[in-house]
Amino acid sequence: MKNVIALLALSLMTVSCVNLEGRLNVSQVLNAKKRGGFLNLQMKSVAIQPGNYQANIKVNNAQSFTLKLKSDKEGSADILIPIKKETDFSIPTNGNIIIRGSEISQPFDLSGRIETNVTLSAQVRTIEECSIQRTENHCDKICSGGTAPAPGRPGIPPYCDIVCRDVLVTFPGTRFVEYHNRYIERNLSADLLDVENKSVLASFTGTDTDSNRITDYYGECR
Image (spheres, helix red, strand yellow):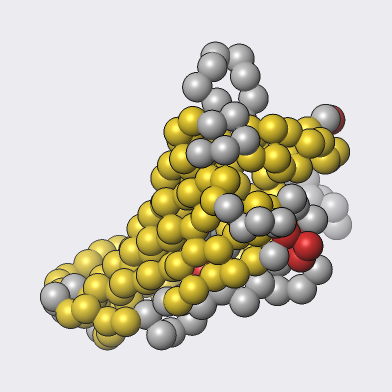
């Protein structure tokens, strides 16, 4: 196994499928603006009481992500807190994060650190199934309908033609393939700070894991 520092295009804000699952520990009353109303299109103020909440941060795009606090009470809605600005966030792959409340129209600052680790598996060599398409010439017998003689051919049964055309036919096959897997783990720890005195109102810790296959070689499908 090979450990690689993620200096590639793996920035948190460039990967819209990132969903950091974790906890939000609220130590003081946290005032925030949440989504609410019809289809969550309105913004409402909310005072989140001290406690430990199951939470996640989901990346929507380069200018927006959402902090979601999951409700433990049956029938109660989750709290959705948008973290959104007019321009792209500058979020590193590895390093410190500082987001001012004035940038995101929230009554708190966000300060934290993200760490990204990439692990590559050993190369796998194997045979896998595939499909082959070939062009074949198919011929069909096409006859005029009905039982009456064909027009212009009195006394002769309905007229038939042999019509041929090229068609694509799919066949099963196999091919040799070489690939390795890439595993990505992102860890975020962040404090939500009072914009005036910078005291810590809440702390979030969360992790996102992802994997994908990287093909090194494809053989011919036979």
